[in-house]
Amino acid sequence: MKAEEVPEVLAADGTTIVVGDADAAVTVELYEDPRCPVVEEFEATGGPALREKLARGEVRAEYTLASFKDDRIGGDGSKRAVNALRAALEADKFAEYHAVLFESAGAIEFAGGFTTASLLSLADRVDGLRSKTFDHAVRTMKYEDFVTASEEAYKAADGEDPRGPGTPTVVINGSRMTGGMYDLLFDKESFGMLLEARFSTDSE
Image 1: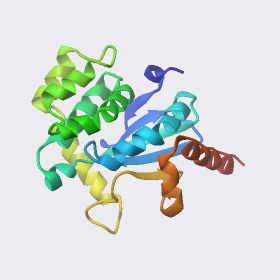
Image 2: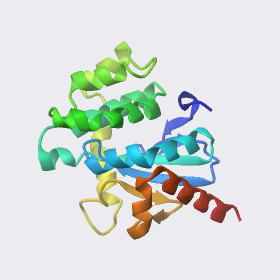
Image 3: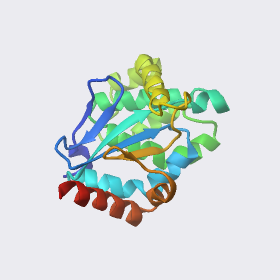
Image 4: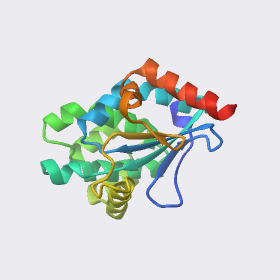
């Protein structure tokens, strides 16, 4: 299926954004902050493998969006980006906007971080996303409560470190990728093979 046809929904917990076939054999939990340069690297390198498998219905992705980078480096760009991503979900354009946002994250961060103007400009690259409803949500921080709740969910995810597990954190079918497995996330072929291995293991 095409990227715009991949199902996406807000989970019952109110903070997890679920993208992909509900019956997919592999579930990938992702913890990301829009201003994190390592997340940007992951999305550019391993991300394409994940997106291809989402389109084929082989994987379901569950995103928890953090915004701690604002407190660490200043500004409110992460919060604004998370709010805009939540607004994109309402238009069934989360996955497309998410991809566009991370393609531009480095340059935007260099220029001072995500702003209302830059987030709306990026939305122009997603067919059908810009609307009065979306623009209003971005300008007014309509989903500020979601932003706060998502950051709290991120902080609670580690269970040991109250600051959260770090971004990106990737959990495949309940197993957190660490050590050598973590390194595989940053290469399209390697991450694709890792997802295939998890698919094969859980299908046997």
